[in-house]
Length: 168
Image (cartoon, rainbow, N blue to C red; front, top):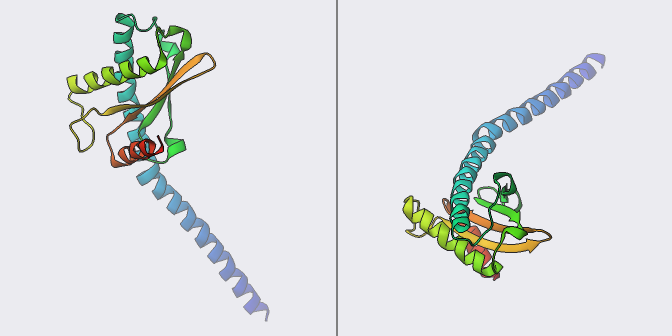
C-alpha cells in the first residue's frame, strides 16, 4: 500500500510539473512569435504617424492655423489596447489654446494635410490608392484638443474604420 501511494504521489507531482512546464513554454512561444512582433509593428507605425502628424502641424503653424507648439506639448498614445490587437490608430493631444479657429475646420485641415503628406511620400492605404492616414475623431476635453489618427496599413485597421463609420 505504501509503495502504491508513493507512486501515485510521484505521478501527480510529475503531472503538475509537466503542466507548469507546458504553460511556461506556451507563454514563451506566444511572446516570441506573437506579442513581441506585434508590439514592434505597432511602435514602428506610431513613429511613422508621429512624423506625419508633426509635419502637418508644422505646416498648419506656418499657415497661421495653429499657434506654435513645443515638441513636448504634442503627445501621442496607442489606442490599440482599447480597440484590439493590430489596430494601428493613435490619439494625439495638444493644448487647446494653440488652436486658431473652429475644431471641425481643424479636422478638415488635418485630413487634407495628412492626405497631401501621404501622396507626397507615396504612402497608400492597404489595398487602396487613397491616403494611408484618416483623422477618425477630434474633440476638446478640458484644456486639451484630442484627435485620433488611424494608419491604414492592415486589414484590421481598415475594418476598425469601417466599424467607426457604421457608428456615425
